[in-house]
Image 1 (tube, rainbow, N blue to C red):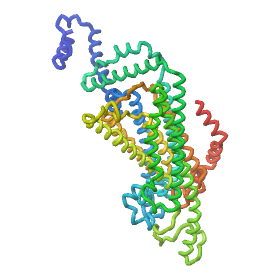
Image 2 (image 1 turned 45 degrees about the horizontal axis):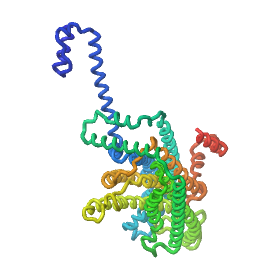
Image 3 (image 1 turned 30 degrees about the horizontal axis):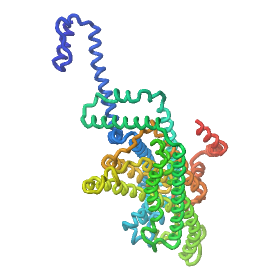
Image 4 (image 1 turned 90 degrees about the horizontal axis):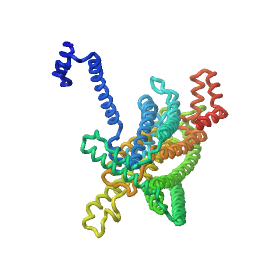
Length: 601
């Protein structure tokens, strides 16, 4: 006991923990000592666990920004930023695949610029290849670089590592789609499991009144955010209760909803006709030569699609005010209409691209014939037998070349992505920031109250922003096979959008008049994303399976179909029995039941 007393007194002197008098020490049992020496390390371990959990939360990107937005604008607005962060993570994986397995190997181990015609700017374009307007249009040196499909060589192996570039290019293109399907379906399943059960509507206001505050808060700013969050949650609950008790004139409501749907259909039809008209004009301009027209004519399709995506959601928002739905149901109707708008615009754009591809294929036949005549002229009018390339003495910049429809498709998707990004940023700066500045500083000297009248502060457009994210991602999935740089551009877009939109929503927007509670999961967003992923793979799969690749550009040049790189690899690099097994396994009679089983599960 004397030894125990000394130990306890030493702990008291060094750390000020516990002090026991001589009488207490004499009656201290061995059990008390065991509890003391076990509880102190246990408390430290629990504190370490709490600190580690706080550290993990702090490491989640933009977590505190999203929490602050949720406290002021509700869970519905915060769900958009959570969805944006999730999309950012997906695109980081896609960027790692395309950059690490396609772009970097070609840049480090492939033949350098100027060694082949496909890697060299034509002589006629050299004077303007480095102009800003040319580079902004992703032509010139940008076109003849690792950013696009046409730059890659068709050698089976490159570099001292014998890296199989055509095989890697094909597998990365297929793998990005497969990974996207897997992660979207897995996220939907996890969200469905997280919904759980139980009744959270009984005594809702009592629970919020007496159990909402967090008594561990010690920071004034955190306390203000928590206060705003509780206030917003009460507004959400009040709206839910009001909607459940609302009585309405059913006949007037039905008439207004039919009228709203008619106006929405007229808007969709007008948008589709406008896109069709603009695409026809662009084809006419292409036949006459784009160099004869200005900037607007060259970018008319992209700009019209971006402007429709900017103004039509606002028109749908005005139309939805006639329907008098619950805010959550109104959001889904709004999402469905904008979804139909974007889908029609996107597939109209795809149909126009297919027409362009057919024109390029016809042009290829003429170029092949002209190259035969050109090669014959180099040999003094005689065509050499088995000639597959021009003489070595000819500079690659002077060699005639085909139109390379794959690079054209990649350029169109990159331009559309960039123009959509610029339109989004300009809309934020003009429609949100300058509007807020005007309302704030001119309200004192205006004829009416600008804050509560027209134009007032803008509300955050959840439906338009969500659909913009989804369809932008659809363009990435659709075009990344022909432009490996697209995932990198999208990562930059999402990264800057997170900061710009977080700033805009906190500084320039006001909470919605009817704040509503978001559902527990983002499965509605995920369902639309899965549908767009499926629709985005159809054109890419069609071009890979049905359209022959260009004869003088890209990793699959010289083949009749792109997927032949798989059979070529099986033939040269695997035993013959493995090729037979793979052939049986790829039989549609086995693949289709497997796909149906996956869908069922």
